Length: 407
Image 1 (spheres, rainbow, N blue to C red):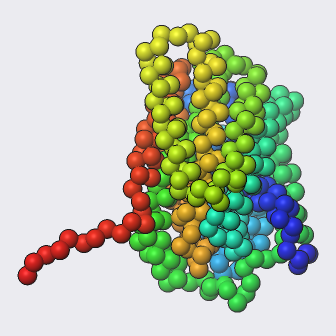
Image 2 (image 1 turned 60 degrees about the horizontal axis):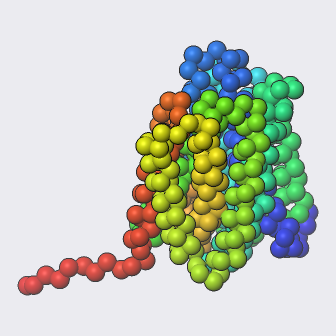
Image 3 (image 1 turned 30 degrees about the horizontal axis):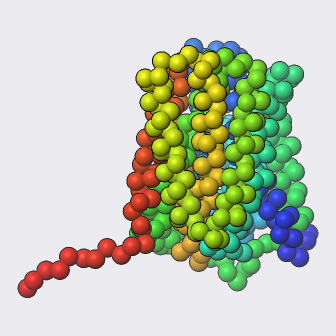
């Protein structure tokens, strides 16, 4: 095992691989919804969306355990253990014969893959903080975007050639590559002298500290609305592209184009964040998203355009919908983690779990509301954008003076 710190670019690439586990585990399933519905006898194809949302719910729950555990035993053992759980649950999914069993397997997959997602953020926080941390995460997102760009195409190719269950074999291979790379190349970033004993009291104290921080709570809720819009898009994407706009087998190609075009956001943020700051970039990006989504919603409702005319506009809006998270999510994570360096693992777990659970709760009704048009998705995104932008206008670091009382 390597004990020398990784070169900066290799560390960025490894971080991107760890982050991409969740994206690959969700996006590759999108083209398989119809086949899953037919194979498992689903009367309502919208229920196939639960394959995504239950997986994300598992990541939310898993973060509550993997983050604090990494503060006690180190970052690498927890990430590697989580990936083993993830791979075992992929085998379980391959043999699932009912939707219920598939969802159980997907939930366990989410719990396992929460380790590389959450603990990697803590690992970054061990080495960086503030704007440099935001720069690392932004550069990782530039490379990370390649995975969601090709994931649906990989999923569709495997499903057409070998059936939808073969997609889980690809998940196993990807996880093995990440696990071996981490094990052989990345040194432990949380040495024994900095570790905390596994005990309920420190966890409870960390929970109280995180939940009592106005900074952490504000940015976590903003993240939740951002995740809600993104998860809602992912849940609805296959049906909107195929059923509404008739994209058919070209859906993965359109999705790849959206991901690649939006991938520049991470590179742009990495260059701007040191100069302008995380908060300013996030507020500006959310304001632009709010205006554009409002205009698109008005066009959908009152424009009286055909689906053929709306489709190019929808594609442009989709690129922006993916571009904005690249300018906001890394910054919001860094802003929320900034005061929590002394409990990075626990803080990352609580922030990640809370934002994920809230995001899924927001996304489920957006996805299930699909009615053959793009309107439910756009309205859901509009409401999330409005809430996010409104919260960002309140400065959580601004001290609120207590009222003075006479006598």
